[in-house]
Amino acid sequence: MTAAALPSPLRIGLSRGALELKVFLRERAAVIFTLGMPAILLLIFGTIFKGEVGRTGVDFRQYIAAGIIASGIMSTTFVSLGITIAQERDDGTLKRLYGTPMPRAAYFIGKTIAALVLSLLETVVLFVLGSLLFGLKPPSTPERWLTFAWVFVAGVTVCTLLGIAISSVPRSGRSAAAVLNVPYLVLQFISGVYYTFSDLPSGVQQVGALFPLKWISQGLRSALLPDTLLAAEPAHSWEHGRTGLVLAAWGVAGLVLCLTTFRWKRRRDA
Image (cartoon, one colour):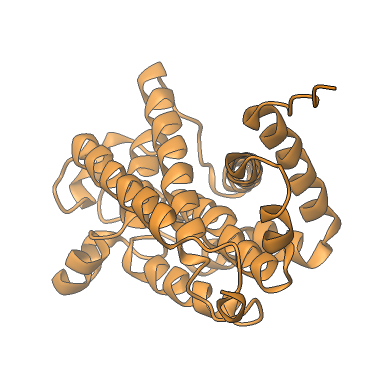
């Protein structure tokens, strides 16, 4: 008697993605922290800081809103995904999945789908808040919509790969939140999320430019804010080409790290 063929990795991955979303949405604390924290930060910083960015005519709160949308993408991918995978490794979930006939790729497809949907939801929430409270407007031309789309997809892809890769760093599931939130918090302050990037010290700018959050923030600003803001950008250009190259490089690096460092078992089980 011939054994029934397993569904394709894509089909299983789609099912796992739906399951991942259901599990996440049932955990109120995770929902509030992951989706609510960027919104709270937007409200706080939008209330504290007012005025315009230099003499560009751009409301500083709109500048912050674009940056927090970028950091929200990183929150739902790099941070949330890395913590979840580290916890699943620690409690033995990954080890049990490894022992099933499920294709390995299906697990990562499911995680990626969940990260993409949550990032989209986070972006919608932050954009609505920014629009209602600070006058943030959607992209005004098809070209800007295209820019928004590719920066969003590239940002989600890069941060998802890096989240999967860094999930192997924490020694336990309990330490994962501390380990992953430290680089996330630092990058927000050196990537032009809460401050105008050109106002940061030159050394800080050079360090921030090494990491993807700076370029995701800049790419989203180019799609959501007027070109008068270019006067406040360090290169006086949106640098779309460089943004694409930096994100592509980080994507390749993240993929290599995933393939070489990902572990299905805890260190003590190896």
